[in-house]
Image (cartoon, rainbow, N blue to C red; front, side, top):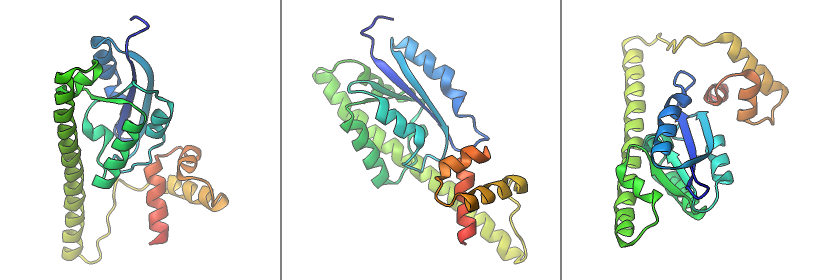
Length: 212
């Protein structure tokens, strides 16, 4: 690849430890090679797409330079954010001067090229599609959460004594996280998760349950 090929920053995300964020790495690398992109960095994390403040995504936005590419597999890997948080993220991407390319959204592939008038028209269409797909990703998430909530309610209505077993809470892990948080009350959830060797979502869940 020549030195002038556009630089791409690969962003990979999955919701939980059960889903491997690196699963899409090979296909994104193949996409980058096909489009003549130089991979400047790969940023992978297991965290909910409903959270705006994701360590690896923030690191990418911090590291990437003007006119470089933020490359994602699909819109829902980048965002299941609320409308206001999606607006914040789009503004941050634009403020950094990054080009957002989504592998499974062909209109976004035009962002790889320098734009003439056709490119500018395509950018308007692409932005509309991005907003639409981000909204669909958010609604899909909300529906999923509502289905789970309704299912739990139905079970409780049928049996007031019923308690969810979840995935079989790892009591040892739970105790470990609680102990770390007790010893280091000001430690960030991210650091607690690294110390306990668990997902940051688990730390937040334990914090929530302790407050309940």
